Image (cartoon, rainbow, N blue to C red; front, side):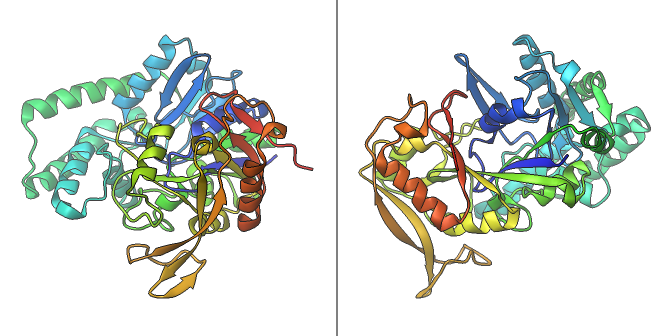
Length: 425
């Protein structure tokens, strides 16, 4: 068996959690391979809404194993809050969740460093969520981090050493924390580490490869989006991990030849949270209308998302980088009321038109748009693609031709039932 990978193709917030939930019945296990608790995956069904931060989105289905892989960074306090909320709602989390020994832990001082680093940037802030994710990945790469498996071994020594390094760095930045405040944060954090130890902590690379060897199917869930990848995103306005399909290999311990289908998720338009360039961003009433109709506010932070038309230059690039085999279009219903729909098919940079995503998109880029007719139809209650209006079918055909990749699933609302699997022949 091979693992299938599901990831975002834009700047995150594409709706990955909903699609993982929809696809989970096809799989024996769901595994998260990167990112931290800044990723809010929102799921809605049976009149309830759930926001997951670190726990995979496959937990609500039929008892599948859910795995938090080694590529994830985990905040014990936030994990505990998330887990206890799920357990209150009836999810038997301890029976289905496995956590890699090799996940790196976000400490209280990581969060303090994150805030201090952002403050030091002044007007050039990255726009992080302040959850300590960047500093945790920094310590991971510099070989100073604390992993969950350390809680079962020489934890006091490793944590104490890292804590002193962080306090020295904070002091050098003029951001020494109040002793009482830090003590309170640490007490809650250490208590949450003990709570974490009550879960099944495993060598997840062996677990996943054993499942594949037994003929079991595994779906890998990414966080954030391709354009936030540390190597191939809009650097430096990116996250601190590899969000692309190759990140599933390093974030779970599976070989590249084990990857099967790669599901790429995108919105029918485009959004971005935080700082950084956004070529198709709309600053007018149309952008505000998209935000209002799409309820475009961060699931974790509540921040307003910046909105714009779909960017096919960036999407082609993301499809290439990830080796996408199937596309999934989200929030199509948000465009139901528009007279015209625009799609950026190229960039004009210093008078030259290109369809290639450039080294940097911080320079002046003029989007080259193709305008298509809107469909002025409420699609939210439709049950099959046969009910789609002609203009929407034409929009799908246009995108498939431009992206040279089939769109196999279309979402027409937030509920898991508002998902149309296309009958492609």
